[in-house]
Length: 456
Image 1 (tube, rainbow, N blue to C red):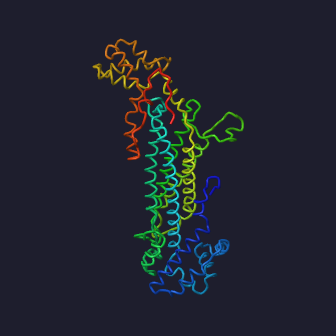
Image 2: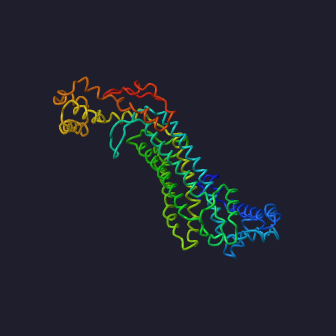
Image 3: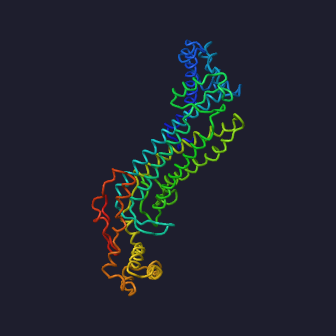
C-alpha cells in the first residue's frame, strides 16, 4: 500500500489488526455453532468471545518459528483464552479461515468501491445537466466530425458508470461466499451447520462445493470487473486530457491557488490528475492475469494463489478506490470553456455541416456519388486553405441548381444537431431528464455568426 494513493477507509480493511479481527470472528462464530450442536461446551464458546485477544507483534513472533500464520494466530489466541482454547478450530482447516476472511474483506472493499462510483455518477449527472445544450465539436479519429453537446459527452460517461456500478455489485455477489468445510472440503470433521451459521453471521452465502478452498474463478471474476471499471476511469480521464491540450482547451482540471505545473516552465498547467488516473487504471488491470492464473490450483488445494492475493487484494481495491474519488473530484471541479468550444466549432468555416449538405443534395435528386464529389471538392479547399463553406457552396452552380440559397443557409443551423438531446438524456437519466429550456436560443448558431452559447 502506497500512502500517496490510499484512502484510510479502504486501507483499514487490509490492516493486519482488521484481518485478525475477522479471523477471530470466524473462529468464535464457529464455536457458537459447535456449542449449539453440542460438540463443545456452551461455556467454552462464551469464554472465547469474552477472553479472545491477540497481538500482531506476538503473532508475527510465533510465525517466525512455526512458519504458519493461522497456527501462530491460534497459539496467541490460546494464550489469552486459556484451557477453553482447545475447542477453537474444531474440525476446521486453515483455508476455512483464510478464504472466508479474504471474501469478507473483498465484500467490504466492494461496498466502498460502489460508494465511490456513486460519487462519480452524482458529479457526472450534475455537470451533464449543466452543459446539456452547450454545443461542442464531436471528434472521430481525433478529427472534427459533427456537432454534439458537452452535456451529451458527460451523459455518455454517466451511462458507462451506471454499468460500472452494476459490475461492482456483481463482483461483490461473486465473492460473498463462506467455506467452513474442513480438510479437502468434505465436512468429515465438522457439520455443514457450522458453515451455514458462520456465513449468516458474516453476511455471506455457503460455498456450494469448497475443495478445502473457495474456487478461484470467483476471485478472477471479481478482479476482472474491477479492471473494466478502471478502464472506464481511464477513458474519461483520457477525454479530459485531450480536451485540456493547448490546441483544444475546451476543458481543464481545476488549477488551485499556489499550484505549480512545472519546475522549469512557470506557465504550465498540466493535467496531472487525469494522467495519474491513467496510471492507476493500469495498476488495477495488472491484477487480472494473476487472478486468472490462480484459478487452476492443484487438486483440492495448493497455496500458489496465496502470495498473489496478498498483493492484488489490497493493491487493486485501494488503487481503484482512490481513483474513483480522484475522478469524482476532477469532474466536480472541472473548468469548462464554452467560448473555446464555439471557436473550435467554427474553426473550419462550417465544414461540420457537410453531411447535411450531402443528404440534402441526394434528397433534391442528385446521385450520392455526384453529391459527395461536390461537397468534398469544396470541403477539401476549405480544410486546406480556409474560407467559408456556405459561401463556397453558394458560388457552386451545381449546388444552387438543386438547393435554393435560403434553404442552403438553413442547412447550417446548429440546432439541427441538438434536436434529440432530450431523447438521449431520457434514456440515460429516466424521468429526471426534463425537456431542455431555451433550446432554440441556445442552438440557432449558424455558420459565420459569432453569438456565444448561453452559460448555464
